[in-house]
Length: 370
Image (cartoon, rainbow, N blue to C red; front, side, top):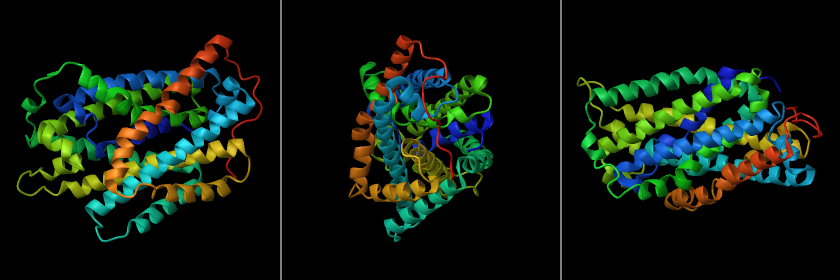
């Protein structure tokens, strides 16, 4: 596997955290204070990112498998690695399902979902076949397009004067408790806790000494943007409409009418969401391949085929869109903190108690793509 540049990690962090997040109005249970819930959750996520970086920087050349073995021992470390692989596979399958649901609801209403899922999985397989280095480079090329596009949409929303900031008032009408309940653990888990996937890739960054600063600043930028978009959506739709909308961001941009000629920006936004979903799905998918290949060393491409079949199959677990959203935003976010919070905290404590911090004592390395 080739090395990754610091800029590539920054770009991937931004693109990954964006991912499918704009699809949902997170924290809407807190009504007009949803953006505060997003803000509090992002601060907690920043702490989690610091924890992940502390674990990584103890052994800069280790991937997730090696980190787990260094802290938990060979057998227990391998078992937890396998659990992480299952978690990554399920997260990837949810992004595939998000992709198909978005497509059916917006542009291809008559197309069977299995066709869309098959196409997305084949594209993901192609990316995995080419390897992580090529995939990171592709995302690096896509980043300027996504950055400029979201900046343009943000400018249009501000210039069109659709916002009514009175819809964000009164702040903390029912105290801080509803905000904290909306933020923890739900928004912390999705999207901010998903940064744990970078423990699979950080060890490949060439400029290891500057990894922490680059990752933290990338996180801060995207967290600020997501909080701003959350507040804008509520200020335009209002908490009542935002809470019942299936695709609040698309409803917001559909309202844009500028200079009597610029409209139908929602199609443009849908394409941006496709890019985000694809990037997130593929990164989880590649992480699963690398983790499994580190436990049971065989051909990287063999695992790529097997795992994409599992992802496609798991995308059909939920029978309908309502069940899919309910499981994703209420059930999964209660389980995933095991991987995002509990295990990383355990590793942090074990490392501190045992004084870990050298690259000695763990056999093996990350499996190479073959």
